[in-house]
Amino acid sequence: MTELKEQLKEALSELRKGKERKFDQTVDLIVNLQKFEIKKSQVNLFVSVPHKIKDKKIAGFLESKNKDVETITKEEFKKYSDKKESKKLVKKFDFFIAQASLMPKVATTFGRVLGPVGKMPSPQLGILFDVNEKAIKELKQKINNSVKIKAKESSIKLAVGKQSMKDEDIIENILTIYDSILKALPKEKDNIKNIEVKFTMTKPEKIGVR
Image 1 (tube, rainbow, N blue to C red):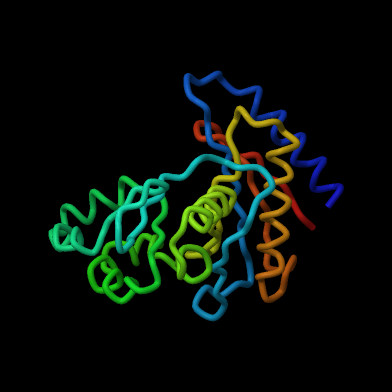
Image 2: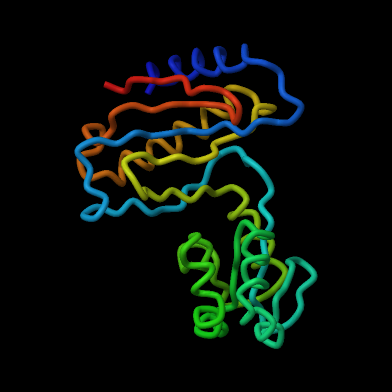
């Protein structure tokens, strides 16, 4: 890991030499896989990172309105049987949570739009059995400090930080995520071809991991 840390430092240093942009670019990590069959091996996990990447826009499917989270109550579900309205909702929020008692109804009403984009509330991170201020605040904090990792093809791409963050914080996030991906792969390091790091508007810096 020490060698990887040094390579990441160099990669970020190179990326920072790029043209200044008028916005805070996202730092992306791309993990390129090899000898890995998507259909046979699933990589689908949530990882808590040490440094928050951004505040996510969270909505809750709850029995009643809640001051701690934007709420869609059972009575409002009817409105979303219109596909246009559902799609607007999916675009507006990064993450959805739900009260356990409403999950069957959430699945039938929103499953067809939330499922394909990977935003269905899940038991891993997003279903509340007890709705109270403490539970919602804790869940929101957990969501804001988590990243979802899913291999849909022979590479995994995800946001790991912002350009405005310190290099060491970005590196800590990358190492935490990389370690979790390694553990989830059937052949661990043998399944990784290389990794790349890039800012939104830059070309990637490639890092070998042999």
